[in-house]
Length: 127
Image (cartoon, rainbow, N blue to C red; front, side, top):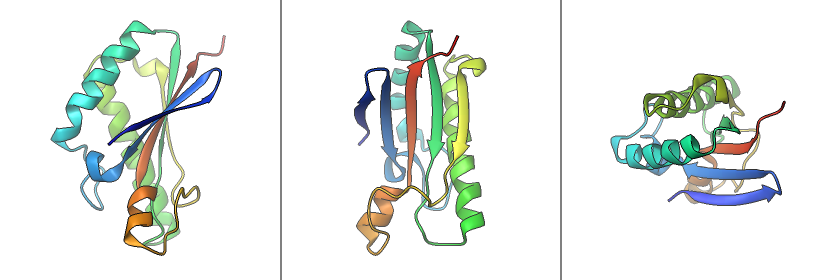
């Protein structure tokens, strides 16, 4: 499932592996993931001063260019889902990192599955 990590005093990262978020090779958010998105949107509604930076990641299977585009589409899909639940567009930034920031080895299926993920970085908005 999703994990939550405090990276600094001002930043929390919610990491969602692709097996709960997307089908293989897809950027369409799975319907099973919608309750998590809804709960996150409700929480974000209570903290309007937080910015939301959504970062998509991919494993190393496929070309660099393809993985970059897939990671961007996945980040955008999660952002669109948050907006569907009422999160203001102006608070959301999306970007893809392709296969360039792995958290596990791409030499095994287990590692590749961990690398296919979306991270939501929450931090105070810059003034």
